[in-house]
Length: 519
Image (cartoon, rainbow, N blue to C red; front, side):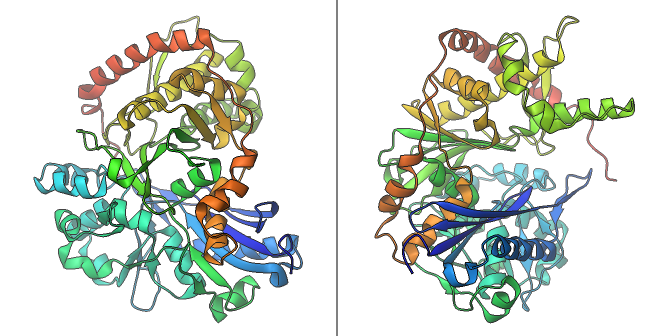
Protein backbone atom coordinates (compact mmCIF):
# COMPACT_ATOMS: atom_id res chain seq x y z
CA UNK A 1 0.00 0.00 0.00
CA UNK A 2 1.08 3.58 -0.63
CA UNK A 3 1.72 6.20 2.03
CA UNK A 4 -1.70 7.81 1.60
CA UNK A 5 -3.54 4.50 1.67
CA UNK A 6 -2.04 3.21 4.90
CA UNK A 7 -3.87 4.47 7.98
CA UNK A 8 -3.09 5.04 11.65
CA UNK A 9 -5.89 5.01 14.22
CA UNK A 10 -5.65 7.46 17.10
CA UNK A 11 -7.91 6.82 20.10
CA UNK A 12 -8.56 9.69 22.51
CA UNK A 13 -10.67 8.71 25.54
CA UNK A 14 -11.56 12.06 27.07
CA UNK A 15 -13.84 12.92 29.95
CA UNK A 16 -16.86 13.72 27.79
CA UNK A 17 -16.26 11.74 24.61
CA UNK A 18 -14.23 8.84 23.23
CA UNK A 19 -12.94 9.36 19.71
CA UNK A 20 -11.39 7.03 17.15
CA UNK A 21 -9.79 8.92 14.27
CA UNK A 22 -7.98 7.67 11.18
CA UNK A 23 -4.97 9.49 9.72
CA UNK A 24 -2.76 8.84 6.73
CA UNK A 25 0.94 8.38 7.41
CA UNK A 26 1.51 11.99 6.33
CA UNK A 27 -1.03 13.30 8.84
CA UNK A 28 -4.23 13.87 6.86
CA UNK A 29 -7.42 13.03 8.75
CA UNK A 30 -9.67 10.70 6.77
CA UNK A 31 -12.33 9.66 9.26
CA UNK A 32 -13.66 10.24 12.77
CA UNK A 33 -16.06 8.44 15.08
CA UNK A 34 -17.04 9.62 18.55
CA UNK A 35 -19.07 8.15 21.38
CA UNK A 36 -20.30 10.25 24.33
CA UNK A 37 -18.61 9.33 27.58
CA UNK A 38 -20.31 9.22 30.96
CA UNK A 39 -19.30 9.51 34.57
CA UNK A 40 -21.19 9.72 37.85
CA UNK A 41 -20.64 12.40 40.47
CA UNK A 42 -21.79 12.55 44.08
CA UNK A 43 -22.12 15.33 46.61
CA UNK A 44 -19.39 13.65 48.64
CA UNK A 45 -16.94 14.77 45.95
CA UNK A 46 -16.87 11.44 44.14
CA UNK A 47 -16.53 11.22 40.36
CA UNK A 48 -16.47 7.69 39.00
CA UNK A 49 -16.63 6.00 35.62
CA UNK A 50 -17.53 2.47 34.61
CA UNK A 51 -14.43 0.72 33.29
CA UNK A 52 -16.45 -1.91 31.42
CA UNK A 53 -18.52 0.73 29.67
CA UNK A 54 -15.44 2.77 28.80
CA UNK A 55 -13.99 -0.23 26.98
CA UNK A 56 -17.34 -1.00 25.34
CA UNK A 57 -17.60 2.60 24.14
CA UNK A 58 -14.04 2.44 22.81
CA UNK A 59 -14.97 -0.70 20.85
CA UNK A 60 -18.04 1.03 19.47
CA UNK A 61 -15.98 4.06 18.40
CA UNK A 62 -13.47 1.88 16.52
CA UNK A 63 -16.19 -0.20 14.86
CA UNK A 64 -18.07 2.95 13.87
CA UNK A 65 -14.87 4.29 12.31
CA UNK A 66 -14.65 1.04 10.38
CA UNK A 67 -18.14 1.61 9.04
CA UNK A 68 -17.13 5.08 7.86
CA UNK A 69 -14.00 3.69 6.24
CA UNK A 70 -15.09 0.30 4.84
CA UNK A 71 -11.54 -0.79 3.98
CA UNK A 72 -10.10 0.18 7.35
CA UNK A 73 -9.38 -3.47 8.17
CA UNK A 74 -7.01 -3.69 5.18
CA UNK A 75 -5.52 -0.19 5.44
CA UNK A 76 -4.77 0.05 9.18
CA UNK A 77 -1.07 -0.24 10.02
CA UNK A 78 -1.08 0.94 13.63
CA UNK A 79 -3.17 2.03 16.61
CA UNK A 80 -2.32 4.43 19.44
CA UNK A 81 -4.36 5.28 22.51
CA UNK A 82 -4.38 8.27 24.84
CA UNK A 83 -6.95 9.48 27.33
CA UNK A 84 -7.87 11.60 30.32
CA UNK A 85 -5.03 11.86 32.80
CA UNK A 86 -4.84 11.23 36.54
CA UNK A 87 -7.48 9.08 38.23
CA UNK A 88 -7.30 5.51 39.50
CA UNK A 89 -8.40 2.50 37.45
CA UNK A 90 -7.91 -0.61 39.60
CA UNK A 91 -7.66 -4.07 38.04
CA UNK A 92 -7.56 -7.49 39.73
CA UNK A 93 -5.37 -10.50 38.95
CA UNK A 94 -7.77 -11.59 36.20
CA UNK A 95 -7.51 -8.20 34.51
CA UNK A 96 -11.05 -7.33 35.56
CA UNK A 97 -12.06 -3.98 37.08
CA UNK A 98 -12.17 -3.59 40.85
CA UNK A 99 -15.27 -1.42 40.87
CA UNK A 100 -15.63 1.84 38.95
CA UNK A 101 -12.64 4.07 38.25
CA UNK A 102 -12.00 7.19 40.32
CA UNK A 103 -11.46 9.81 37.62
CA UNK A 104 -9.52 13.06 37.78
CA UNK A 105 -12.59 15.04 38.86
CA UNK A 106 -12.89 13.03 42.07
CA UNK A 107 -12.30 15.30 45.09
CA UNK A 108 -12.53 12.79 47.94
CA UNK A 109 -8.78 12.81 48.58
CA UNK A 110 -8.71 16.52 49.53
CA UNK A 111 -7.97 15.95 53.23
CA UNK A 112 -5.37 13.32 52.40
CA UNK A 113 -3.63 15.76 50.07
CA UNK A 114 -3.43 18.39 52.79
CA UNK A 115 -1.99 15.88 55.23
CA UNK A 116 0.64 14.66 52.75
CA UNK A 117 1.66 18.20 51.84
CA UNK A 118 2.47 18.92 55.48
CA UNK A 119 4.94 16.04 55.66
CA UNK A 120 8.66 16.86 55.32
CA UNK A 121 8.96 14.23 52.59
CA UNK A 122 6.71 16.23 50.26
CA UNK A 123 9.52 18.64 49.37
CA UNK A 124 11.63 15.82 47.96
CA UNK A 125 8.57 14.30 46.25
CA UNK A 126 8.00 17.64 44.48
CA UNK A 127 11.68 17.92 43.51
CA UNK A 128 11.53 14.50 41.85
CA UNK A 129 8.17 14.79 40.10
CA UNK A 130 8.05 18.54 39.50
CA UNK A 131 4.36 18.22 40.25
CA UNK A 132 2.24 19.72 42.99
CA UNK A 133 0.10 17.20 44.83
CA UNK A 134 -3.65 17.49 44.25
CA UNK A 135 -6.83 15.45 44.45
CA UNK A 136 -6.77 14.50 40.77
CA UNK A 137 -3.67 12.38 40.93
CA UNK A 138 -3.48 8.65 41.33
CA UNK A 139 -0.84 8.98 44.04
CA UNK A 140 -3.14 11.07 46.24
CA UNK A 141 -6.15 8.89 45.46
CA UNK A 142 -4.29 5.66 46.25
CA UNK A 143 -3.05 7.14 49.52
CA UNK A 144 -6.64 8.08 50.38
CA UNK A 145 -7.98 4.67 49.36
CA UNK A 146 -5.27 2.98 51.39
CA UNK A 147 -6.53 4.76 54.53
CA UNK A 148 -10.28 4.80 53.97
CA UNK A 149 -11.02 1.93 51.54
CA UNK A 150 -8.20 -0.59 52.03
CA UNK A 151 -10.38 -3.45 50.81
CA UNK A 152 -10.14 -2.01 47.28
CA UNK A 153 -6.36 -2.32 47.30
CA UNK A 154 -6.45 -5.82 48.77
CA UNK A 155 -8.48 -6.93 45.77
CA UNK A 156 -6.30 -5.12 43.22
CA UNK A 157 -3.33 -6.37 41.27
CA UNK A 158 -2.44 -3.22 39.31
CA UNK A 159 -3.37 0.47 39.29
CA UNK A 160 -3.84 1.91 35.81
CA UNK A 161 -4.99 5.13 34.19
CA UNK A 162 -7.71 5.46 31.57
CA UNK A 163 -5.51 4.95 28.51
CA UNK A 164 -3.59 2.18 30.31
CA UNK A 165 -6.88 0.34 30.89
CA UNK A 166 -7.79 0.58 27.20
CA UNK A 167 -4.27 -0.55 26.26
CA UNK A 168 -4.73 -3.59 28.50
CA UNK A 169 -8.04 -4.34 26.80
CA UNK A 170 -6.44 -3.96 23.35
CA UNK A 171 -3.25 -5.93 23.98
CA UNK A 172 -3.50 -7.83 27.27
CA UNK A 173 -0.42 -5.91 28.48
CA UNK A 174 -0.34 -3.98 31.77
CA UNK A 175 1.69 -0.81 31.35
CA UNK A 176 1.77 2.96 31.72
CA UNK A 177 3.74 5.64 29.92
CA UNK A 178 6.69 7.83 31.02
CA UNK A 179 4.64 11.05 31.28
CA UNK A 180 1.94 9.70 33.59
CA UNK A 181 4.37 7.59 35.63
CA UNK A 182 6.98 10.26 36.28
CA UNK A 183 4.71 13.15 37.28
CA UNK A 184 2.82 10.90 39.69
CA UNK A 185 5.31 8.41 41.09
CA UNK A 186 8.67 9.14 39.51
CA UNK A 187 11.45 11.46 38.42
CA UNK A 188 10.95 13.44 35.20
CA UNK A 189 14.72 13.54 34.69
CA UNK A 190 15.04 9.77 34.46
CA UNK A 191 11.50 8.97 33.24
CA UNK A 192 11.28 6.19 35.80
CA UNK A 193 9.68 5.43 39.16
CA UNK A 194 11.22 6.92 42.29
CA UNK A 195 11.13 4.92 45.49
CA UNK A 196 11.48 8.23 47.34
CA UNK A 197 8.24 9.50 45.81
CA UNK A 198 6.37 6.26 46.41
CA UNK A 199 7.43 6.31 50.08
CA UNK A 200 6.48 9.97 50.46
CA UNK A 201 2.96 9.05 49.41
CA UNK A 202 2.86 6.28 52.02
CA UNK A 203 2.56 3.62 49.33
CA UNK A 204 5.77 1.64 49.72
CA UNK A 205 3.75 -1.41 50.78
CA UNK A 206 1.71 -1.15 47.59
CA UNK A 207 4.61 -0.76 45.13
CA UNK A 208 3.37 -3.93 43.42
CA UNK A 209 0.39 -2.01 42.02
CA UNK A 210 2.54 0.11 39.70
CA UNK A 211 2.81 -1.28 36.15
CA UNK A 212 5.83 -1.32 33.85
CA UNK A 213 6.65 1.90 32.00
CA UNK A 214 6.85 1.76 28.20
CA UNK A 215 7.31 4.48 25.56
CA UNK A 216 4.78 3.99 22.79
CA UNK A 217 6.94 5.79 20.23
CA UNK A 218 9.61 3.13 20.70
CA UNK A 219 7.76 -0.03 21.74
CA UNK A 220 4.45 -1.54 20.65
CA UNK A 221 2.42 -4.62 21.51
CA UNK A 222 0.20 -6.62 19.23
CA UNK A 223 -3.56 -6.23 19.08
CA UNK A 224 -4.81 -9.38 20.80
CA UNK A 225 -6.95 -11.93 19.01
CA UNK A 226 -9.83 -11.32 21.42
CA UNK A 227 -9.71 -7.53 20.97
CA UNK A 228 -9.30 -7.86 17.21
CA UNK A 229 -12.57 -9.79 16.99
CA UNK A 230 -14.33 -7.08 18.97
CA UNK A 231 -13.04 -4.09 16.98
CA UNK A 232 -12.98 -5.74 13.53
CA UNK A 233 -9.27 -5.15 12.93
CA UNK A 234 -6.51 -7.66 12.20
CA UNK A 235 -4.89 -9.40 15.15
CA UNK A 236 -1.24 -8.53 15.54
CA UNK A 237 -1.66 -4.89 14.53
CA UNK A 238 0.98 -2.84 16.44
CA UNK A 239 -0.58 -0.83 19.28
CA UNK A 240 1.20 2.15 20.88
CA UNK A 241 0.51 3.32 24.41
CA UNK A 242 0.38 7.09 24.11
CA UNK A 243 1.46 9.68 26.60
CA UNK A 244 -1.22 11.41 28.69
CA UNK A 245 -3.79 13.39 26.69
CA UNK A 246 -2.59 16.82 27.82
CA UNK A 247 0.89 16.13 26.45
CA UNK A 248 -0.34 14.72 23.15
CA UNK A 249 -2.92 17.46 22.63
CA UNK A 250 -0.10 19.96 23.10
CA UNK A 251 2.10 18.00 20.72
CA UNK A 252 -0.58 17.94 18.03
CA UNK A 253 -1.40 21.62 18.56
CA UNK A 254 2.19 22.79 18.21
CA UNK A 255 3.64 23.18 21.71
CA UNK A 256 6.99 22.20 20.20
CA UNK A 257 7.97 22.91 16.60
CA UNK A 258 11.73 23.12 16.98
CA UNK A 259 12.37 25.65 19.76
CA UNK A 260 11.39 26.12 23.39
CA UNK A 261 10.19 29.73 23.22
CA UNK A 262 6.64 28.83 22.30
CA UNK A 263 3.83 27.59 24.51
CA UNK A 264 0.42 25.97 24.22
CA UNK A 265 -2.85 26.59 26.03
CA UNK A 266 -5.61 24.03 25.80
CA UNK A 267 -8.79 25.91 26.65
CA UNK A 268 -11.40 23.19 26.97
CA UNK A 269 -13.33 21.85 29.94
CA UNK A 270 -10.12 22.41 31.85
CA UNK A 271 -7.33 24.84 31.05
CA UNK A 272 -3.85 23.46 30.47
CA UNK A 273 -0.97 25.85 29.92
CA UNK A 274 2.40 24.42 28.95
CA UNK A 275 5.75 25.28 27.48
CA UNK A 276 8.58 22.95 26.47
CA UNK A 277 11.92 22.88 28.20
CA UNK A 278 14.89 20.60 28.56
CA UNK A 279 14.73 18.46 31.67
CA UNK A 280 18.03 19.95 32.89
CA UNK A 281 16.76 23.53 32.67
CA UNK A 282 13.52 23.12 34.60
CA UNK A 283 13.21 25.58 37.50
CA UNK A 284 10.57 24.56 40.02
CA UNK A 285 8.48 27.14 41.89
CA UNK A 286 8.60 27.53 45.65
CA UNK A 287 4.86 26.96 46.08
CA UNK A 288 5.11 23.36 44.85
CA UNK A 289 2.47 23.76 42.17
CA UNK A 290 2.18 22.76 38.54
CA UNK A 291 3.23 19.72 36.59
CA UNK A 292 6.31 18.59 34.73
CA UNK A 293 5.43 16.03 32.07
CA UNK A 294 7.78 14.37 29.64
CA UNK A 295 7.34 14.79 25.89
CA UNK A 296 7.82 11.83 23.52
CA UNK A 297 11.06 13.56 22.47
CA UNK A 298 14.32 12.62 24.23
CA UNK A 299 15.39 15.13 26.87
CA UNK A 300 12.33 17.39 26.51
CA UNK A 301 9.57 17.99 29.02
CA UNK A 302 6.63 20.36 29.30
CA UNK A 303 6.21 22.58 32.34
CA UNK A 304 2.52 23.00 33.01
CA UNK A 305 -0.03 24.72 35.12
CA UNK A 306 -3.55 23.39 34.81
CA UNK A 307 -6.86 24.97 35.83
CA UNK A 308 -9.46 22.56 37.18
CA UNK A 309 -12.19 24.29 35.18
CA UNK A 310 -11.97 26.46 32.10
CA UNK A 311 -14.89 26.46 29.65
CA UNK A 312 -16.80 24.52 32.31
CA UNK A 313 -17.40 27.98 33.77
CA UNK A 314 -19.16 29.10 30.59
CA UNK A 315 -21.03 25.81 30.38
CA UNK A 316 -22.34 26.40 33.90
CA UNK A 317 -23.67 29.88 33.08
CA UNK A 318 -25.21 28.87 29.75
CA UNK A 319 -26.82 25.77 31.23
CA UNK A 320 -28.21 27.86 34.09
CA UNK A 321 -29.98 30.18 31.67
CA UNK A 322 -31.17 27.26 29.59
CA UNK A 323 -32.69 25.60 32.66
CA UNK A 324 -34.37 28.85 33.67
CA UNK A 325 -35.93 29.20 30.23
CA UNK A 326 -37.12 25.61 30.46
CA UNK A 327 -38.99 26.42 33.66
CA UNK A 328 -41.13 28.84 31.60
CA UNK A 329 -41.66 26.48 28.68
CA UNK A 330 -38.96 27.86 26.38
CA UNK A 331 -36.26 25.78 24.73
CA UNK A 332 -32.84 27.38 24.64
CA UNK A 333 -29.99 25.17 23.54
CA UNK A 334 -26.58 25.95 25.08
CA UNK A 335 -24.83 25.37 21.74
CA UNK A 336 -26.98 28.12 20.22
CA UNK A 337 -25.77 30.54 22.87
CA UNK A 338 -22.17 29.52 22.34
CA UNK A 339 -22.49 30.63 18.73
CA UNK A 340 -23.21 34.12 20.06
CA UNK A 341 -20.05 34.25 22.16
CA UNK A 342 -18.07 36.51 19.84
CA UNK A 343 -21.00 38.93 19.47
CA UNK A 344 -21.36 39.18 23.25
CA UNK A 345 -17.64 39.80 23.64
CA UNK A 346 -17.68 42.49 20.95
CA UNK A 347 -20.63 44.30 22.56
CA UNK A 348 -19.29 44.43 26.12
CA UNK A 349 -16.39 46.18 27.83
CA UNK A 350 -13.59 44.12 29.34
CA UNK A 351 -12.56 44.45 32.97
CA UNK A 352 -15.83 45.78 34.38
CA UNK A 353 -16.41 42.75 36.61
CA UNK A 354 -14.07 40.32 38.35
CA UNK A 355 -14.77 36.63 37.94
CA UNK A 356 -12.78 33.85 39.59
CA UNK A 357 -13.20 30.71 37.45
CA UNK A 358 -13.10 28.08 40.20
CA UNK A 359 -16.43 26.39 39.41
CA UNK A 360 -15.09 22.86 39.89
CA UNK A 361 -16.22 20.92 42.96
CA UNK A 362 -12.55 19.99 43.38
CA UNK A 363 -11.46 23.61 43.76
CA UNK A 364 -8.32 24.72 41.95
CA UNK A 365 -4.93 23.16 41.16
CA UNK A 366 -3.13 25.80 39.11
CA UNK A 367 -1.26 27.96 39.73
CA UNK A 368 -2.31 27.46 43.34
CA UNK A 369 -3.78 24.36 44.96
CA UNK A 370 -6.88 24.78 47.09
CA UNK A 371 -9.68 22.21 47.07
CA UNK A 372 -11.94 24.77 48.80
CA UNK A 373 -11.62 27.44 46.09
CA UNK A 374 -14.95 28.46 44.58
CA UNK A 375 -16.09 30.71 41.75
CA UNK A 376 -17.35 34.24 42.31
CA UNK A 377 -18.47 37.41 40.57
CA UNK A 378 -17.34 40.66 42.15
CA UNK A 379 -18.77 44.04 41.25
CA UNK A 380 -22.21 43.08 40.00
CA UNK A 381 -24.69 45.97 39.79
CA UNK A 382 -28.24 46.37 38.54
CA UNK A 383 -27.14 47.62 35.11
CA UNK A 384 -25.07 44.51 34.34
CA UNK A 385 -26.55 42.14 31.76
CA UNK A 386 -26.14 38.48 30.88
CA UNK A 387 -23.54 39.34 28.18
CA UNK A 388 -21.59 41.27 30.84
CA UNK A 389 -21.40 38.07 32.89
CA UNK A 390 -20.24 36.10 29.84
CA UNK A 391 -17.59 38.78 29.24
CA UNK A 392 -16.49 38.56 32.86
CA UNK A 393 -16.05 34.78 32.64
CA UNK A 394 -13.89 35.10 29.52
CA UNK A 395 -11.88 37.85 31.24
CA UNK A 396 -11.52 35.61 34.29
CA UNK A 397 -10.24 32.73 32.18
CA UNK A 398 -7.73 35.06 30.53
CA UNK A 399 -6.56 36.19 33.98
CA UNK A 400 -6.27 32.57 35.14
CA UNK A 401 -4.17 31.80 32.05
CA UNK A 402 -1.82 34.70 32.77
CA UNK A 403 -1.64 33.65 36.42
CA UNK A 404 -0.50 30.19 35.31
CA UNK A 405 2.13 31.33 32.80
CA UNK A 406 3.79 33.77 35.15
CA UNK A 407 4.69 30.86 37.48
CA UNK A 408 6.33 28.90 34.64
CA UNK A 409 8.80 31.62 33.63
CA UNK A 410 9.10 34.51 31.16
CA UNK A 411 6.18 34.97 28.78
CA UNK A 412 6.67 32.94 25.58
CA UNK A 413 6.96 34.73 22.25
CA UNK A 414 3.91 32.92 20.87
CA UNK A 415 1.00 30.86 22.18
CA UNK A 416 -0.49 27.92 20.29
CA UNK A 417 -4.10 27.49 21.38
CA UNK A 418 -6.28 24.41 21.25
CA UNK A 419 -9.61 23.30 22.67
CA UNK A 420 -13.17 24.40 22.06
CA UNK A 421 -12.49 28.06 22.92
CA UNK A 422 -9.88 28.30 20.16
CA UNK A 423 -12.72 28.57 17.63
CA UNK A 424 -13.75 31.94 19.11
CA UNK A 425 -11.91 34.97 17.70
CA UNK A 426 -12.86 36.94 20.81
CA UNK A 427 -11.46 34.26 23.09
CA UNK A 428 -8.20 34.14 21.12
CA UNK A 429 -7.90 37.93 21.38
CA UNK A 430 -8.50 37.73 25.14
CA UNK A 431 -5.68 35.22 25.66
CA UNK A 432 -3.30 37.11 23.34
CA UNK A 433 -4.02 40.41 25.09
CA UNK A 434 -3.69 38.97 28.59
CA UNK A 435 -0.29 37.44 27.80
CA UNK A 436 0.99 40.11 25.40
CA UNK A 437 1.84 37.42 22.85
CA UNK A 438 0.21 36.42 19.56
CA UNK A 439 -1.97 33.31 19.48
CA UNK A 440 -1.96 30.74 16.69
CA UNK A 441 -4.27 27.80 16.25
CA UNK A 442 -3.90 24.70 14.14
CA UNK A 443 -6.30 23.87 11.36
CA UNK A 444 -6.29 20.37 12.82
CA UNK A 445 -9.18 19.95 15.25
CA UNK A 446 -8.41 16.53 16.72
CA UNK A 447 -5.00 17.31 18.15
CA UNK A 448 -5.07 14.73 20.96
CA UNK A 449 -5.76 11.78 18.69
CA UNK A 450 -3.26 13.20 16.21
CA UNK A 451 -0.59 13.33 18.91
CA UNK A 452 -1.26 9.68 19.70
CA UNK A 453 -1.13 8.72 16.01
CA UNK A 454 2.16 10.58 15.69
CA UNK A 455 3.63 8.27 18.32
CA UNK A 456 2.43 5.30 16.30
CA UNK A 457 3.92 6.79 13.12
CA UNK A 458 7.34 7.01 14.77
CA UNK A 459 7.00 3.58 16.41
CA UNK A 460 6.33 1.76 13.12
CA UNK A 461 9.18 3.59 11.37
CA UNK A 462 7.21 5.96 9.15
CA UNK A 463 9.42 8.74 10.60
CA UNK A 464 12.90 8.45 12.03
CA UNK A 465 12.16 10.87 14.86
CA UNK A 466 9.33 12.82 16.43
CA UNK A 467 10.88 16.07 15.19
CA UNK A 468 10.55 14.81 11.60
CA UNK A 469 6.94 13.85 12.26
CA UNK A 470 6.16 17.27 13.78
CA UNK A 471 7.61 18.99 10.71
CA UNK A 472 5.03 17.27 8.49
CA UNK A 473 2.06 16.76 10.82
CA UNK A 474 2.07 20.00 12.84
CA UNK A 475 4.06 22.99 11.58
CA UNK A 476 2.36 23.37 8.17
CA UNK A 477 -1.10 23.47 9.79
CA UNK A 478 -0.47 26.49 12.05
CA UNK A 479 -2.69 29.36 10.91
CA UNK A 480 -2.11 33.11 10.95
CA UNK A 481 -1.72 34.56 14.41
CA UNK A 482 -4.18 36.66 16.41
CA UNK A 483 -2.22 39.61 17.85
CA UNK A 484 -2.87 41.31 21.20
CA UNK A 485 -5.31 44.23 21.09
CA UNK A 486 -3.92 47.43 22.60
CA UNK A 487 -7.16 48.50 24.30
CA UNK A 488 -7.75 45.03 25.70
CA UNK A 489 -4.15 44.79 26.93
CA UNK A 490 -4.63 48.02 28.84
CA UNK A 491 -7.90 46.85 30.41
CA UNK A 492 -6.34 43.55 31.44
CA UNK A 493 -3.29 45.21 32.97
CA UNK A 494 -5.57 46.87 35.51
CA UNK A 495 -7.86 43.89 35.91
CA UNK A 496 -5.10 41.44 36.77
CA UNK A 497 -4.09 43.25 39.94
CA UNK A 498 -7.72 43.34 41.10
CA UNK A 499 -8.12 39.65 40.16
CA UNK A 500 -5.13 38.58 42.27
CA UNK A 501 -5.88 40.87 45.22
CA UNK A 502 -9.49 39.69 45.49
CA UNK A 503 -8.54 36.06 44.97
CA UNK A 504 -6.09 36.15 47.85
CA UNK A 505 -8.61 37.96 50.05
CA UNK A 506 -11.20 35.23 49.44
CA UNK A 507 -9.08 32.37 50.78
CA UNK A 508 -10.33 32.64 54.40
CA UNK A 509 -13.93 32.83 53.16
CA UNK A 510 -13.62 29.64 51.09
CA UNK A 511 -12.73 27.66 54.19
CA UNK A 512 -15.91 28.87 55.92
CA UNK A 513 -18.32 27.98 53.13
CA UNK A 514 -20.69 25.08 53.87
CA UNK A 515 -19.45 21.72 52.71
CA UNK A 516 -21.53 19.61 50.34
CA UNK A 517 -23.22 16.77 52.21
CA UNK A 518 -23.28 13.19 50.85
CA UNK A 519 -26.32 12.22 48.83
